[in-house]
Length: 256
Image (cartoon, rainbow, N blue to C red; front, top):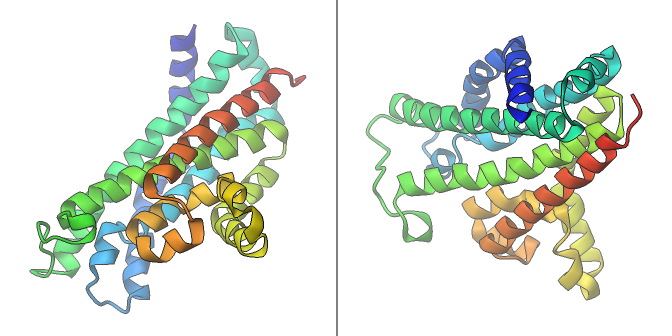
């Protein structure tokens, strides 16, 4: 049953030390963003949760790759297959676990943003001052985290797809890192190089990874993506479903 698979996955997942270290690691990583801004107050820094988005995705890749690839390498996947009623239960239980953890990390990032803002920007942050999209700063922060959650869903789906393709944990991590940090640039280059076909190319999955950046700096990124925020959100969700399903098809036909 799905419930049994979920219980097993949650049990294994929360016994990994890195799962507990990751929220702690977010603190110095977010403070690093403050350093990059030369210790100056910036409303952009606040609504972007001190640039927590890319770090959360990186942590998800490192942790998420292990729940697939390490089981392939160690052979423990065979035990799961024997106990589970179907491969679909195993696959989507893993996805639900990492997605819930993704939500937790974003909630922690929200809390850390509030605390860090109060500590390092005392008296400077007006949470109800109108900022982007004619919305209060606090609303911008919450919506940035929500669109970041959508973007990270696509990252997780891509990770599951590549993890299903390869038994090598390191390879899945490297490919996912390349997509996170270089995929957006690759999409921009394609749009610039093949302008005649930009009406098609702009819908490529790598372009959807620009979602959080576009929400926080719309004027700059809209020119690059050529899509609205809602279009990127819709595209990201569609590609999440596509890559998850293709990943499952590969996983279900693998011989272990």
